[in-house]
Length: 393
Image (cartoon, rainbow, N blue to C red; front, side, top):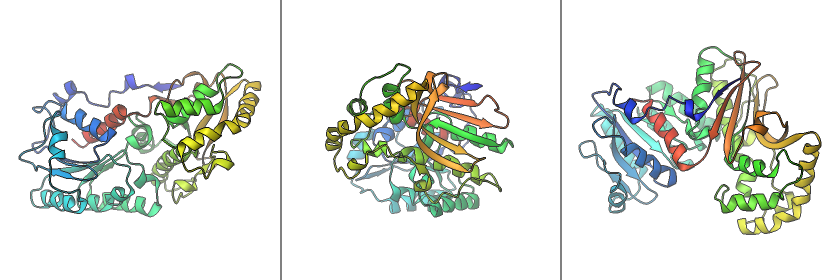
């Protein structure tokens, strides 16, 4: 069993490594869309690279309400003043206008341009094909384009192949953890994926690390979910996590990557993440609950069901984990609650809101490749996005 931990990840160049990199004569011009938690952290990380060694020029920032476009000659270079400059811009947020300006740089000035989409917007994701077709690279943690309607995904693939522009989306699955890159290398070098299984959701990881342990009994399910919400691990409405959709989206992204690399894939052709066999943990009577507060108030009424499930697992010396599975031999992509023996890495290795993913392949067999670490949070997600951007240098 080979385990890859964040400490071993030397694929993300540091500032010291950047000083030894060969920087192209023309820097990569970067336009950022989305300046929320992840977007702000990404900008801070990007601008923390010393100007003399940075291969990037940050030329545009777009929030939900306004855009700051400075152009190549006067790039944004201050980590302390970019927010005030964006706030003071009189230009409204207009992606069509931004696109036209970037197209001018690519076509007329022969510049290399990348758009970094830090939003979770389907509308922004829908623009990827036109950006790629125009020769603009796309880097993003936005899952929507790669796990939504299959036709959009196929348009993205076709546009990238046609123009040579790249789309990089490592952060859509493991945030800062390397998941997509190792999978691409496994497939490109001729290895065959047998199965991928993992705890892909930091929220679900925390909930079941607290709820189902090696000890018999434990806190109620509702109390664990309530604490997770108070700590900010869940969405404001916990049902948005307990429905399993986040895991289904990540499985869709990985499954499509496998299918795209194989002419004889046995995996189902997923029309969207809704095609994944997904077990929802939302009690049926609470499915229509409109507010998160009401959901938390009513969830204790269903604690007995979850406790009984936990005790059944304990009798088998097992714990409960919400996992995602891609099984190429069975042709199955599914997400749901599973039991794992106390000796299994999913029982022994997880802590807090960690993610853990196991790759079972012909080469990594019988001992799988294991990737584990923080799979959520603004800092590590932004790091994953910046790591992708560095691949374009």
